[in-house]
Image (cartoon, rainbow over all chains, first blue to last red; front, side, top):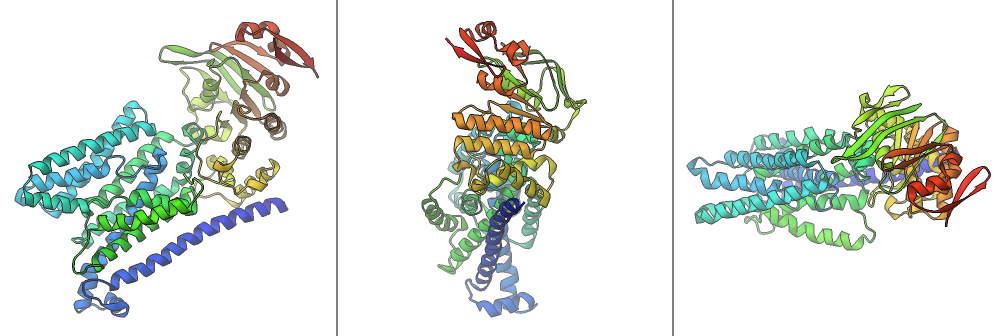
Length: 343
Length: 251
């Protein structure tokens, strides 16, 4: 029994390290949130921002509660949501390149937004754009599920269908942009950059509902996601309903993606890179990977947005651009530093 | 007891398995042999519930397998595929722990962890317990997959070519492990085998398939014969007896 205890102890030690990393991420997130709260076009300082959080009057209170906090919360939600969606897509499609892009979800949401901007006429509002983007994002994932149902739910079929959908909607978006006026094209380009500037608490409510309702389900399925890597046959033999996990995994990840990008535009890349960064540190067990990836996504998007709105304040650099500028070098650094193949 | 009767499986109008009958008691090892493409893997996958047979019944401990939920089936039958996954981003302990999946809802209990540690120790994997599965050699991977099957704690083990791609030492280790699992835990095993000599040495009975049909089934001495090898494999061979097991030497 001595030996058994030793092995268990070592294993628990390793799990403890992974758990500590998640705690560390939470601490980092806390400090970045404080910085994000205090920095902006008008610098409030740590102390004043913190006081303004709880004081119900004054300009500082308005800046914090109406401008900065919604933006910060949305950045965190979107970062967390897209990173988790990317993790799930990578697990169920068994592909390191899988992300909300791979399945054409981002480009079909983009097409939805383009349609609303071009044809919405004088009625087009934030909600019309978000609603159409959401509708098209889900439409593309249901198209993929339909094809999978017809041809079998193999990862290859799904990825190929997704890439075809991506090109189709990208071409349609380009066609509509080609036909649109200069003013509308400008609006479209801005949407594609991604923006957190017009976010209110109502939008946050919708996105957080999607993100927080799905996370417990995805964690419950963490063992099944782990087993998909062992191959469909092994997973089935261990009691996993592979088709169900793949179908519902895609539906949940698509819901998170659609809700996130409909209001903020395409904040790409995070869904691809955050899961990989997390995987390099905590490994492939989804029980740790899902929360770690979500937190890394949260930190990256929040850091990117804070930089984007403070670097050349009052000028704001679109979030999609800064996210890539921060994420890509960091990802390259990890990719080079980490010698053994983690995927 | 595992009993299969009148099992048929076809793919795109081609019959892969025809009228297969098996009765396997606990504590016994059955090897299924036959040329490539003769339906050995398909048979194991049908029993494991991975593929759905067209006709026939599979009864596990007197229960109709087609009426059992996947998770229920996984508690009775463990399946080890022919090849280890090319990428499996978990460490050895986690990979073995996956075998407990049919018995766990959220997180493994202390009992599950202890059981996995015990299996790792008994299979001599303690030195690599926290190493990544992807870094292991072929033989080590096969042992980990076997350990996972042990952790599954099922009555019936299905192993598809457990010794393929292994060197002589690992072949013997793996076969002795299977033998030990069957004798020690009161389980039963069905092995799809290419190596007739290993099948002969370690099996209680051998079933020889030819084009999806049972060609002959019985004691290794009845199945591994010059005539049967010539008819099924088209190979002339000599048979040597050692310790009452027939061993084959192709001419």
